[in-house]
Amino acid sequence: MERIKMTTPLVEMDGDEMTRILWQMIKEELILPYVDLKTEYYDLGLENRNATDDQVTVDSANATRKYGVAVKCATITPNGARMKEYSLKEMWKSPNGTIRAILDGTVFRAPILVKGIVPYVSNWKKPITIARHAYGDVYKNTEIKVPGAGRAELVFTAEDGTEIRELIHDFEGAGILQGIHNTEQSISSFARACFGYAVDTKQDLWFSTKDTISKKYDHTFKDIFQEIYDAEYKKKFEELGIEYFYTLIDDAVARVIRSEGGFIWACKNYDGDVMSDMVATAYGDLSMMTSVLVSPSGAYEYEAAHGTVQRHYYKHLKGEETSTNSIATIFAWTGALRKRGELDGNEELTAFAKKLEQACVKTVEDGKMTKSLSLISSCENPVILNSLDFIRAIRETLAGLLDNH
Ligand code: NAP
Ligand code: MG
Image (cartoon, rainbow, N blue to C red; front, side, top):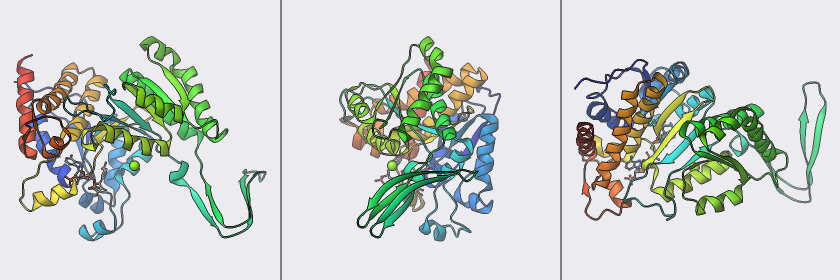
């Protein structure tokens, strides 16, 4: 068989531990036999981040801006234990944080639906995609533990020295205080990423905040979304027959539970943190979630939603068998190949990505799965495979699907 040609390279960001092992297996078994793969390779494994003073992470993000599509393996975010384990020069920042800051992106997460893994909410038939704003609010807050009686004020000093001053509270005793912020620029980028993704995936977009209580802060989010929608996206939405609507977060929660899924739910930073864990858990777990970072300039970075699966890696190092689910990492590859195919008008590549996704789903639906999947599947007699054999089973299914057409 002739391998599928690519015109533009993908930015390939390699990573750490068990997912780095899976990365290699996926390429060898599922991609290279079929695709004449072109990538610009960046090794974001912790050793190389340390060796390059983390420059490799910055370079990989800049390459993503240049080429438009990246695929990323899970990476270690160092902590005290990792400092020792890898003899690090510094406690390097989270690569995802660095990449997100450079691409100014919004993260979209959606479950991968498979028959036999039934969502806890029985009327959810289609995936719910959470779009989480990844800047500001409580994640960049300033806090004071108020020691005793006194006045708390909110003060803004303009560059010309003029002040805006608001009373927060006259404390009669001890208490707590918190200052949070956001910027119009970041909220606008978030809004554009959400509208763009809705158009891309032809799904409705829901957005929710608490603007009835937060009449300036949350209301500004609502207004910016509405202005950008009216000015830039309304026509496209109408052409595609999709809808944008805003509602209060408590109303949204009720509607989400009653819905059958199949839409994007845009959430402020904290709401997105909480709701994405709820949605992921209700659909199965993080090993069956896709995750893509979309920048307002139109760059895409695909990854798995889970981490490097450290516990499995240590077993692997001891020569013990592992049964790690590679589906989320495979979907990172298919997401990137499909997007590359769309951008380059390379239909063969797009079709291949689709087939590989179908092969993953069909393999599990045929009862062949990893240990972790068997724990959440209702399949009665699953065949439990080790990490490599699971990938080989997907390859067999894929070969069948490609032969049949
Ligand atoms: P994790 O790698 O997501 O794994 C936590 C546990 O979830 C595993 O021990 C395993 O449970 C289960 N699990 C996760 N993915 C699985 C898969 N594909 N197949 C089977 N089981 C899976 O999270 P972590 O152990 O908290 O973090 C490990 C490292 O990942 C950390 O250094 C962290 O910094 C990094 N991390 C990276 C990213 C990223 O790059 N996007 C995201 C999160 C965490 P059992 O052990 O019970 O089988
Ligand atoms: Mg969380």
